[in-house]
Image (tube, rainbow, N blue to C red; front, side):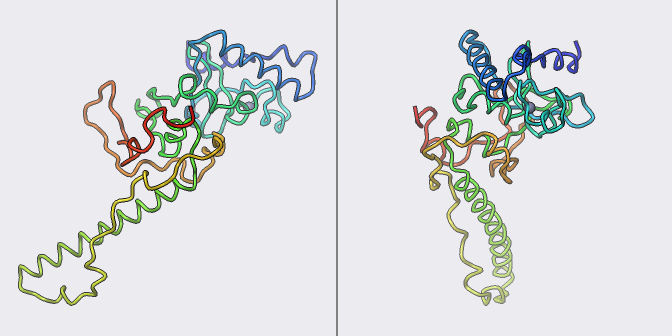
Length: 263
Ligand SMILES: [Zn+2]
């Protein structure tokens, strides 16, 4: 079965019946919510995934929400999901949702960590590589949604500033050492500030990441830094089962060991 057919087959509404006879939007959403919760309760292997929406030239799945805001806006019964990210529910019997439509039915953070995962599968349209998820998204999953977006954004800003300053300082330091070797004193005459070593490398442990309330997944996905990666990135030449495209951030694990937040 092609991916297109599988997706569209999977996109059969779980609450199709809920539309006939039509109820109010609230009733329809409530019915689908109940059905979804029952599905998760009854099938302990059921998992949802956050994944990238395939590019335009590929077939795109339609939203399975019984009350899809985008379909409503388009005055259509179904619309294709065109957002950058989407939710896939189930693996064999797949259904797809706009993230916001899925949120209307169930709080994604309540499914973490076992029932909602980052899609780590390889994508044909990504040269058969898995997607490299941005730092903020990974932290949302790590912390079950309890992240402070501003603090992580500040960490990314500070880290990049630090990297830039380190690079500048390295260049000046090398020039200074070369000049010393040549007996040229001109670089020592440079203003003192340029000879100061860079500041300490920022670490996530110096940023309070937890917040009192879980952050909505759709809010995370709308953040301007959503695709920004962890500062240190390496691509292994050998692909193994547990390889990672992104190294963990400095200091994060020490401060928030897995599962230590908001049990
Ligand atoms: Zn939708």
